Length: 105
Image (cartoon, rainbow, N blue to C red; front, side):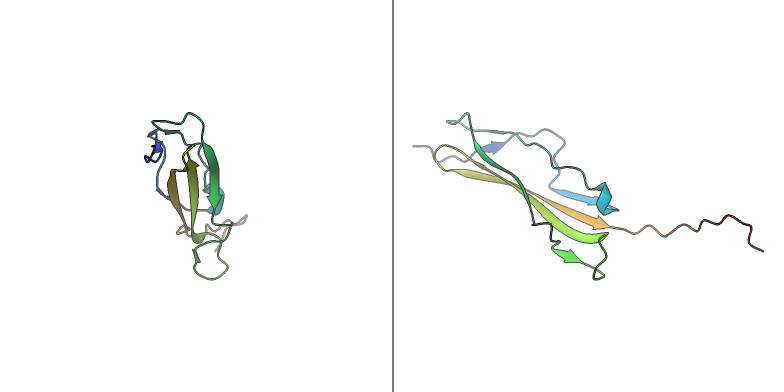
């Protein structure tokens, strides 16, 4: 009887926590690989993002200050499951840059 859940293959590039300065800098979701002692093909849900709804936003309405998660779920033939969860924090701390076309006196 297979009671062992699938194992995530370490690609060296997956990070369970990621911080970026702008929402537009959030990378596309990675394709993750798993191995299993008994199953060659997996049922895979790739990835579920927290429904596009941030876990938190501060200040309210600021899209460049939020936290959300992506969850990958892998299920083998015997219904053993493994998850990979990535928490992404968007934190804009860059001050605006003043751009002017004329000299200030």
